[in-house]
Length: 261
Image 1 (cartoon, rainbow, N blue to C red):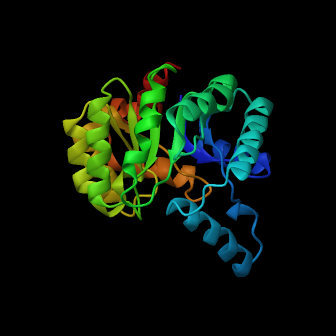
Image 2: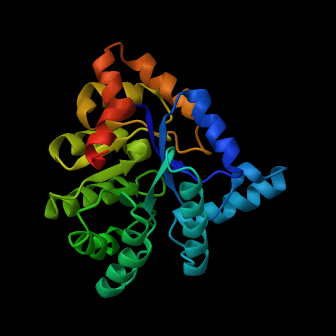
């Protein structure tokens, strides 16, 4: 089974299903979104959506009402296509431990989501994930999906690894493979058994090739659609390795095993 392990909600849903069919993706792990760049019609509207996205990624925007609305949208899409989509649940940072537990209970566990994330942080904010990890210990030790591309720094990624070491039973997916810090990110993942490498958003096929060679058992395929294309990302994986068993692991088996699918 081919599993795209990271896409955001795309509207209309028929468009997302079409992208999946074209790429031969059987199932997608769906993440909520408060922006829809795929719906923009010109440069001005696209820049507006990207401005909001940049504020979210940099940790400057964390609106609870918009987050709740995006989760409801995500839940609706999954419910309408249960054979095609499963979800990870968005959890805000900056809440107390008790507030975090209540959020996970009400907006993750209640929807039977398979993981937590995406977490987007400003540089120097990794410590805000501590209540997430602590709360997660009471909710099945669900995998955490953390954005590690810009504006995250290498020190931030190292701090994620240090935090993950305190919770060795919680899988941590390093989203976008560390961006420009990809080489050090691969090394950190090799040293820590609960770190996984997500290949979406990488800017070079060489990065994907080295991740596969270094850690094929913990490298996972994803497109980050609508920001990436599932067909192109799948073709990169298939181009970077000729070993069919390795292809199978990266294109679906690794994430299926991690989520007990």
